[in-house]
Length: 130
Image (cartoon, rainbow, N blue to C red; front, side, top):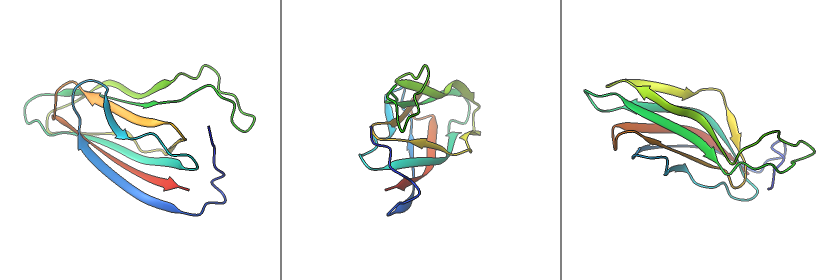
């Protein structure tokens, strides 16, 4: 797993995207990170667009491993780590899931899902660092 030095970067491109979440945890929000890149997630917000019913959201990073990177070995790292697990979002409300930056490395993917199809919309603001 490559871990680029983010002090000596060539580019930092700000990105954002949103999508309606389907049921289950199979929705890919950010696909697997390419070699030589790091993604810094700045904010994740989920909005419930259903006017009458609450819905649950789960969001996780898939692809984490236990490899030692630059002399630092994770302890108990799992391939899938949840940022949010079955958190209820009330009807016509929004929820800030993340507003403190985190980093994703090569092979990591941001995924998630909802308890009801198309009731929840997710918006992610992030930087692609190369």
